[in-house]
Amino acid sequence: MNCFLALMSMHAGQWVERGWAQAPSASVSNVSDIPLQLARQDEVDAGTGRFHRISESVSWKADQVAVIVCDVWDSHHCLNAVRRVGEVAPRIDSFVAEMRRRGATIIHAPSDCMPQYKVEPARLHAQAIPIDPATPDTLGKWCDRIPSEEQSLYPVDQSDGGEDDDLVEHAQWHETLRDHGRNPKTPWLRQTEQIRVDQEQDFISDSGKEIWNILKSRNVKHVMLCGVHTNMCVLGRPFGLRQLKAHGIEAVLVRDLTDTMYNPQRWPFVSHFSGTDAVVQHIERFVCSTMTSDQVLGGIPFRFSEDHRPHWAILIAEDEYKTEETLVRWANEHLAKDFRFTIIYSDAKQPNRLIGLEALAEADALLVSVRRRPLPAEDLERIRSFVAAGKPVLGIRTASHAFSLRDKLSPGLEQWPEFDSQVFGGNYTNHYGNEFVTTLEVDPKSDHELVPSKARGQKLFQSKGSLYRVTPLQPGTKVLWLGSIPDQPAEPVAWTFVRRDSGKSFYTSLGHAGDFEEDSFNALLLNAAYWLTDLPNRVTPQDIGLQQFRHRSGQGKQR
Image (tube, rainbow, N blue to C red; front, side):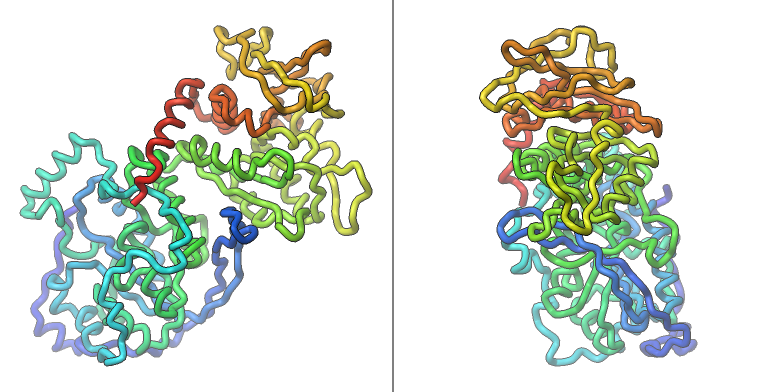
């Protein structure tokens, strides 16, 4: 990719001669309303630290909207950051063009680059807006944190600057920058020319005060902010999300048109794109709502070419085994390396409602930890449709009786008693007493790819969770692990199943809190996730143990 596009050059007199030095008129003839779905995260219940992802329908008048393009520079000290900008910039350009066509105000904000634009009309437009003496002084400053963030732990360690380059490539890149006469530490000169500036209509500024006054002069009530980098400039600049929120402007992050400076070798030791997800999640919880560009452009949200992560929807609604803690920790520590995921909890006040089930529409796989929760017909139909589409399903512990009751149904709710047999090939009838400790082993007869031949018959650990009665399983199941208690026949505790719809399922009756302390169980779950989504990655219990050590040793270094 050529990172040094030819820079525009035109004599200052030509700009004035064409009459472009004045600020553009705010009147646009083709103004339209823009229907949007904004995402935010609200705490499930005060003090839980768990959040529902809420979708809110709004409609904004386009002439009351501004799009701010943050720091999409023509170069960067991080080569991978340059590559990702090269991918996302054309989509930002399309988004900006469409919002401009609809009547929105467009502000290009490539920080530190204003000298390059000193004679360009879009820069002169910004300077032509009078600065109100009452403009808050704080708008001239970087903002590291706003009060709503004080309750949170910052989600990534960016203390190394977030560079994720290969070291050899990084050194070669800096040599290339020097050869082009650029400072390798700050090589940007202007915004990438992949994003076009309409010199007659747009504004160029990196000043929080100037941008504030542009917004006020054009009666802007809503801001869509896109660009890079989410965890740094997008949040912290004088015109960034924090300052807009602090000063009463309703701002949203266009979450698919952004990127982070995050190095996967730092806490929380997840993929670069999962690091971006973590920052977006932080923003949705503590700063502002988000949206995606397809709501303006149509099609699907933008996704980087290197982001191959399947998307898991995780349903958690049970009161017995604390999977809202154990399973969430497992997902954050292990699943986030190669997957993205959305956690869907039940409503604290209405336990038979799962908040955020619309996420199933874009999910690739489903993980269920639910106990005896019949659902409203519409919600249960979402799950039925997901399964019927042949998509993979993973269930733990009480998922065998996730959507069925022993008692009479309340009005307005439906159950799915065949979920166990139809989706997992199971046959849950009851469980043995809680006083028994379950001894686990790898099934000596298993020939499944999730069981290495050398592991067959291997003794595992002892589970404190009661042993489920599931024999006989449905045809098409393949048992992986067995559990036994004194004086009783062994029972399958983990198996796979290919459903009638040809979809793949994995189920384990394990999932007691103590099971998540066992590396072999964590590895089994993660390998099942890889198998279900056709990823080749496999981990051993030893890999899991090392990863847990890294996570524990990395905490406390987030800033």
